[in-house]
Image (tube, rainbow, N blue to C red; front, side, top):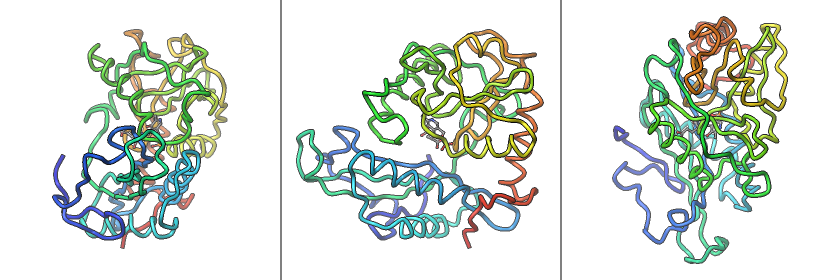
Length: 305
Ligand code: PPE
């Protein structure tokens, strides 16, 4: 990770080396944080932040679920994100807003701890490797499941929940896979450690519903919209594991992963083992819009300057 010049911390921009926390920070002990991952793209007409409002909304929703009061308004956070990208003179970057419980008490109940906010921006290329977008990735079903619905609020982007993602990601790497796919507590397909998943078969597009313990991805929503623009209906329904092996195409979506084709699952090749036509058309739209070559017809881009 390369240092950037500025990090926004509790209302002001500070130098990278100054953005530090105390070891008694509650979030360090218990994962008490909510966060976002957002991308800014070089559009050919300056940089622009993708789906800024949707991400800020989800940050506040995650905080609400976790009974955490963010000490800024949505508009203030929105502006702070723009200011940080601008201050660091990025053309394209990954933005990480983080809201966490700081100092106050060491017990489990976090409510005595102050809520702190930071916004970090870094340069971040292809999440699953430089060739992934064209070649696709090899993935495996994880032995770790996503959390059962009465254990953690999967739809909220809460720091501590990412222990589950870390176990999935580390196990996948250990097995030589680019990523792992978790099943939900009923055994249906849920999502990757940091991506939503889509399945294409006989022209229909399926994706797991919110009840399969997924994060309701911003990119997932955009891809559903783009698919509809291309006259494909997307159905949110329970997906059994074998539907992955039987699929014509499978792909991941996420801010970091963008739209990444999956070419094999558990060493079983998907379709003909190459990026499929539906995935390709969705990528053309997605990268066309984020790259500024296709008009931003859904109003997804916020210019930085
Ligand atoms: N599921 C999970 C568990 C998840 O973490 C992400 C985002 C998604 C789905 C896709 O959501 P969205 O980005 O709104 O389309 N994962 C973020 C974190 C990746 C990381 O390594 O950290 C991301 O893509 O920014």
